[in-house]
Image (cartoon, rainbow, N blue to C red; front, side, top):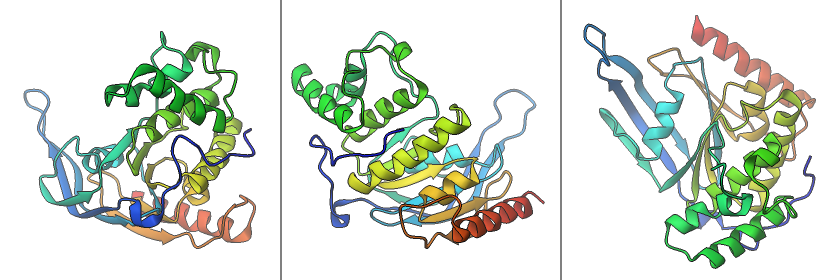
Length: 262
């Protein structure tokens, strides 16, 4: 477990005034039928939410309720059929780390910089500094298959940060990890975001993950997704899972999710 994170030299912490925000107002999205005779799929039916500069907003809900569709709207990968989406440029980190198996850790982390036109050595230098700050010094030349699941996710997160976007959309980034590693990575991410602030929209199936990481939790109903409940997590950081306030909020969020499912 990474217990200490230094403020990265490659990506200095930004003040809230420099961070972007995200606002959805009555956003709706329906996908056309994929085959003859099939019905169109209504994914979102009027979702409104706001993430202010530097806030972490978690979105939970049952499978198929439109959580990933919501992130695609925020990232501008798709357009809403109705309503508005107002978001600063955002970077998407998917559930799978999507590291290129033939590239080293440092070259995978530097990929966003290379795509942006940064020279190879300059990109590697910035990625190397961030990997060191993320506890991966000595693993820069390792290929993905030589890294643990948690290490791979740290490389993927470094790559996402180096995109330069101040809004991050995290789509169940730790779902593929075992329970212990998942908790360690949640704590690690909380520490990373404390020193490298970003505005974050986090999609997760894990209610505890949402409560531990977020400033606010949005509970979506089954498809088509609607906002069934909003919970503010007014608990100081760092957070302990056994704190009474967090336990109570977890129970409230779980109850809201169960109620939304009907």
